[in-house]
Image 1 (cartoon, rainbow, N blue to C red):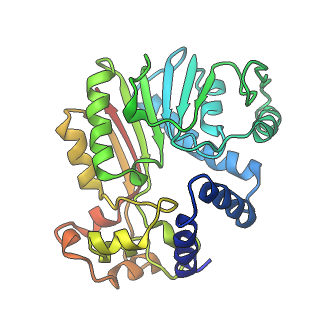
Image 2 (tube, one colour; image 1 turned 180 degrees about the vertical axis):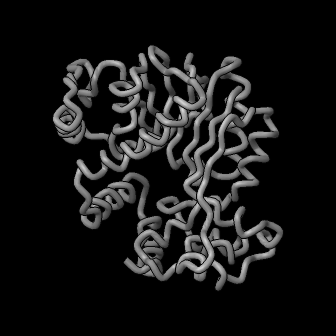
Image 3 (cartoon, rainbow, N blue to C red; image 1 turned 120 degrees about the horizontal axis):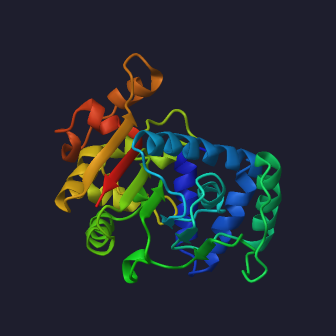
Length: 289
């Protein structure tokens, strides 16, 4: 879908009363998203494999540990990889929205069992029938409650969709409430969401707008704070969080994506960053408290 059409659609949805706008958004997502549950699991598997390699390299063992996931998403794929592949004791997954359904979880239980030859057993005590050891808390804001006793805090493509102030407050909270030597792991995708279905739009197109202009364009359905890699690193440093590992991809010259980026007239807020810093994407950072 062309990004301009999508913007108009999201703007229209945002005018609807609360709950009705979320309901319509769900229906539209279901209509246009033709990816199968298996393809979504495989997409999450790539995250798990990348994470697993880094954990091995850093000699971090999560066996029998408790993990907190910020941003549960549409279905609990990552918690399943934590539980059945990384053998954690418990995964607590929290989301500002409520996307999980019992029907989808039951399908996931069966599919995950078949794909990985693992006996995934539903817990009848859980209304979503999630396996024992996976706890889901929807419609919850992590900033408004104390963190449970966990050894790792994890997010997958969430930080870019929080306000700058909330990203800062989150890490202040993590520094204060997580025990010393706990780990914080973020996967971050700081690219313009509007280009996901519009290949003619640069992944950094939104960097041409002022803050006020950008506020008029995006909505809660495609919210993006536009923080660049150096800005994330500044926040981590501010709260004395040690960077154990950092990897990312930047656009390569003589590629279509790089050419599209170079066509952008950057707003003055971004002109002091290098091309490498501006286009850094697919970020994986491991922090230690």
